[in-house]
Amino acid sequence: MKTALTLLIFTGLFAGQAAFTQVKPPMPLLAAPGAIHNGVAAANFGEIDSSRSYPDVRSFRKKFGLVIPATNTSMEHELWGLIFANQGPNGLHGVGLHTVNVITPSPKLETEADLLEYQKQFLGGLRSAVDTAKLGQPEYMIMGMSLEHILSGIDQIRAPMKVVESHSSLKWATWHDAAPAALNKFGARRIGLLTPFDKKGNESAKRLFEDLGFEVVSTFGFSCANAMHIAHIPDWAKERAILEYLATDKNNLDAIVQCGTNMSLLDITEKLEPVIGIPILGINAVTFWHALRENGFTAPLVGGGRLLREF
Image (cartoon, rainbow, N blue to C red):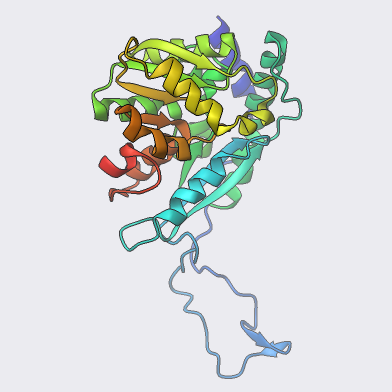
């Protein structure tokens, strides 16, 4: 019943929206008289061939739309970091991000009531964010949100995404698809979860991965009371959580999995994977890996851990 109610509310937010249209060649379309010099037609400049469409000069290989909460200051930074770290001929030169925010004006997460209000804000703000993203004409979308933080169980998570995908007419990379794809690459079944969530959020995260067929052996959450503050969790605390509470001999894990897109983990992944001997799968790197591989970018990538280098 709860899943159906969430979907009903969410679907209603998209009712009555006009279909999106793509701008077609010529691109760029120039107003008469074309290129101008000192306010008049530029002599001998000629014309930009209007029989073809020129690509976006920064995103000429692929333009990704990225949807994140307005309080998220980490995910876009990490994705651009991966792009800039892999600019070689077989890398990500020509790949761009068109990022839009979902307005979440009350990011408190101290109580269950706060979490329900945050859920309402995020799901309610998706319509506007998707509409805004489409204005930049992305070719593929990335969901930059740990939906398991605000929704419980794979069915509740998939329901609003189905509406989003239909509304946008684009394919999306989501954490609940990317994470199992990554874990399966390593043959990982026993996992530990690292999150910025409180007890309830960790229970939802645990349920998601159990729904997906994995054994969640241990969880560690920082219980952040404000969504914006997640970006301020210090790296030493993340390292300690991994080394002392998750990647232990007793737990005998196949992988560490990190939820929460505002909790940066790239540097930790690069530093600790060689130490603990198992993959560390952070949500930002993994979701971007999935988006890239789904769009034909198959070359090994640096700066994002074993997953991006090996698969």
